[in-house]
Image (cartoon, rainbow, N blue to C red):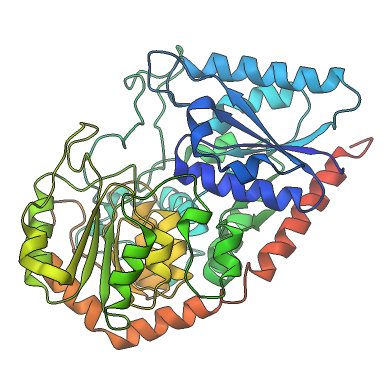
Length: 481
């Protein structure tokens, strides 16, 4: 055993799953990987992951009587105490490996844990579970001070591709409040600290990760050079640190499938609200590339007013579709949300409506799926890119706006659902976007060509980056360093 590496994800499955895959890659190089999570996330960890001989899971008890997430003020002292106890235990037992470093999620967790690791002499590595483009755009728009941009002006961002130039419309953001489950104290700060913005920086705001990673020895990002080389190189130049792309951190089954169907049931510790066999049967009955898949992830949502607009747009469209609707759709955490009653009867076999969780990897990997109406969360984005599926981008918060720009402007494998992403999206825009996406054969060819780069498995460049990462932490942990 080469040593132990801690991995600390922020709350939410979009952060947990990449950290699980990173732990597997670390363990594949004979290091012990210790995943430190809040106990609320334990049920989402696959049993096969727990059985790995070089992987350990350390649960931090979630605060009682509150949202059990790291942003809650009751969580910070509990996390820090548990971390100190864990590390102290390691140091008292000579047969346990010495922690070589901690890979820490940059959504809040880095700010909270840096002092503990610094005090105990454990190097930290900042981890972006999102992509390089979003981090680079946060940094570049802050440096360019884009808040004073004028109508009609196009402002280039030095060091980044010209396609990522900013206009005043790019500064618009929807006002949806905090994402689901991300509660916490009001904007007065945590535990008497100074006020702090949470989550990704808005256009021109100072990215909190810049200060929080000042003492980190490196940064790792859930992406690869095939997708985001220019953005990765930009971050390395600007931060003066090694920046390694070690992803996309998707399951080994995804990479091993070679472009064939991926079974979610073999990967994720969740049961879909529809059998995979029924989904496959429905998709098999549709022509290749004809199906539009609609899903907005588990943490963000369109508005209650937009849901019936979308239902009407799908009814008016002639394309087959799969629409995944959460059970609290449009209701921000309430048990019962919007459901398009009667739509299934009106569209018949042309539509498949799934309420609850759905087998997304299976749907995206099926040859009948030809488009993805998506919020452009990073996990969903790379899952679709890897299967050659183009996008109708509908970003809803934070880094999703930059992910959408990457897809639409730089990779050119998608369209925006609206020219004004700061307001309500209307039915007419949805219909126009669906028709444009599903009818663009050239875009489908570009998407398929991009996806073909991943048919042979996990990127070699990401493997090499992981090697460079382990070489650095070995060097930093050597006596005298």
